Image (cartoon, rainbow, N blue to C red; front, side):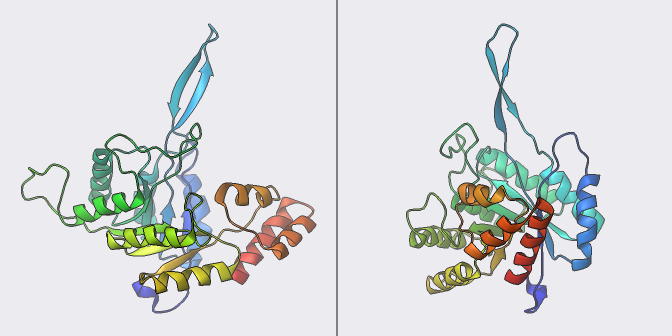
Length: 282
């Protein structure tokens, strides 16, 4: 961000491939995007899911599965192949504080110095988010733990001559408020806590109406949040997303965008409409 010098830059967020695929599928997606010289590439993290398989005796067996592993490996591969900073998402959910510390140590050893600290969502079988025992319950707590490592403070207080890390910490924000927040002002209050604990920049949840973003930035500045606030954009790609996106992410879609998508005869046209809308937003 410091290198941007006021110029508009575009970064990208990618998902790890489904288990069974290889890293080449990631490279195939990134290769055509490199002409845009992204300053960084985010890589999402996907926690475990619970599935139930029926046994021969008719009973159900609960299994823990991870459908998209490989976040750390992909980040290392991206930095090695493209020389671009990769930013892994790190979650509260599914991690004890010890797990988190070890995860961060791995990143540090690999030369990955940027992280996106998130609480994460509830697993699909649960209605509300539940932290692990001895885990971080909120993103602000996760930010604090990462900041402590940057100061050389580990969970084991008896460690001597412990080294410091140098993580730049990003956090999420929601121009239309987090779905669990009672109000936008309350949401900004907790966002400010994440900044106070050591976060250095913000990336917003997707939005489709730029006024919502600019109004949100203005509210943040009035609340003395001065760090960069990077807008998060996502092109609509299918008609199904007209219902899915508002339901899952709790964001509004402008009526003009809805009308254009409904007119489309197939998802190829929808994708083009989505891309053009994103271009207009940027």
